[in-house]
Image (tube, helix red, strand yellow):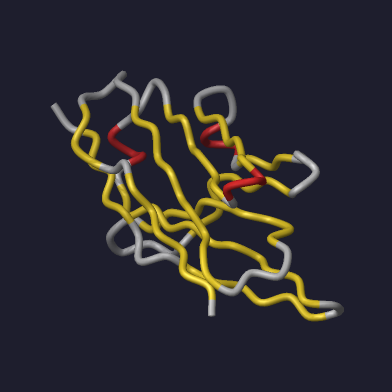
Length: 119
């Protein structure tokens, strides 16, 4: 089993910054992709950004130019640097990890960390 744990959420004023961290641990085969999703009250969970083990990244249009995803493969850890935060960024942020075992890929989710952008 693989555990995924997020950290770094909190309350920040509009225009401020936060850095989220997410670490995968346990019986890992090969983490090939890690990503950040978010879910605001009354809305569906949406992709924020993800990154492959090779470093390829993908961002939601709403965060391009403001958020940066990065990864430490040796630590199976992914980071999300969030700048110029807006009230619309308020949500629970979830991390996932795609663990490849041969031809199978298992997806593990963390429990989420709250990000609140408010003055």
